[in-house]
Length: 144
Image (tube, rainbow, N blue to C red; front, side, top):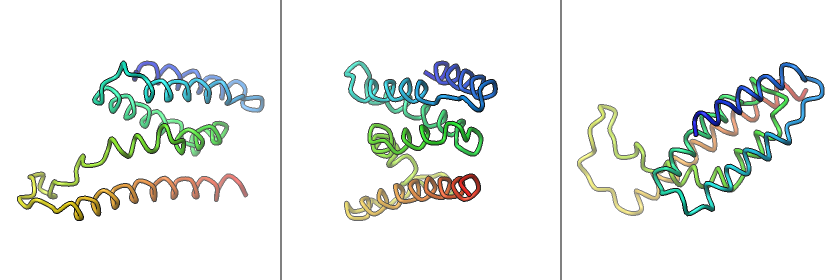
């Protein structure tokens, strides 16, 4: 899937550089939304494959963020905030590093369910906060 997203990125980059004024983001939005819907509603992908595709898609969204591609800003915002992506991405990324100490070794204590819920909530809040900071910084500099 990374090759597919790289090809979409190259096509988007070329389309934006040649048609900056008349750029139409709808075809890219529809294509990415169809990919997102397919991977989340299809039974063909197991959980690990689904997670890898979501990570590839998040890397793609990082490459085409509104600071680099302002013509794709509204589609980008719609895609990253869509329930097919954001909820599933956050659900798949919980627990990836919550039980590791700064030295890289596992923590010896077993957290209670309440502590695990707090850690999960904190991790998700950090991701949402980063997203909002990027969004507001873009709006601050490009929508004045």
